[in-house]
Image (tube, rainbow, N blue to C red; front, side, top):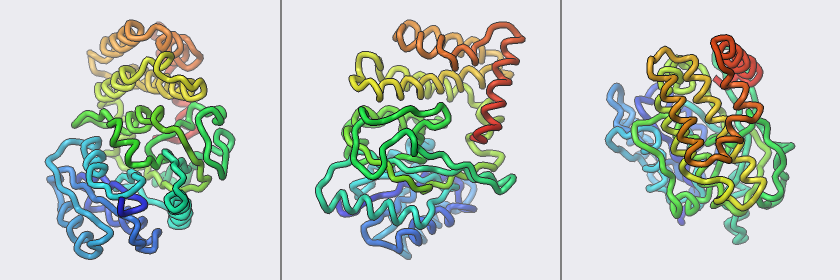
Length: 344
């Protein structure tokens, strides 16, 4: 691999804000030659996203690669970036987000050290920050109490993660070969595939490192953003599709030998079932309740132990309360969590 790290930037009608994202990586890395930025235009139709990508490539031909593809959705753009990556490591940065410069330099120093010394680290984890445009406030998500610092470690050394502390795409920097060798089953034309990206490759990662810096800045506030609540409710069918793919990826009790990793993945999967349940309750689509019931039924048939963990634990019970009163109570619990963490 000719680069230390490749950053994949999926873009779809992103001309208005993509420059900030790209600049944050190039400037933050001091235009280092071992850094690659792959701008993937996912068939933009409303603006000059691809033309801007080509302009960046023309300005920095050894650093930036512009890729164009027919529209396939976020997951296909992530995979196109991965396919074109020349870096030992691969990290996704969405086009409306950005990276903190000082934190990026620390990440690069860390990765260069691994490459130079021949130490194999499959996954490097760092913090991310919700940047709320509506009130100009930030909410940082870190893993200081859950992960060892300043050492290479395995899953057996991790601690407890709170439900709002799951490892998301924003916090992950995989070795490129980990992603390529096992594949990432992300469907086309589907939102929320970042959950698959942050879940399915984990058992392949044998060595990890936690860099306690607030690297990724996650923009929250555009009305059409995929994590906007109204948008998420309208796309409940896609949320359920993603959750089903995650369900079918593993029989966790049989396929994941390391107990602490299995417990973490059960927690993540339970959260996905909870999100599907809450947004089904918020949806006015006539088929939403039936689709949710089918998901729970299929989970029970697929793996009874995973079903019991997801359905009858504290979280599963809270979001599946019966009757209309229970439905309002479940939504109320979600609203409290939403205010505390401000995740959308």
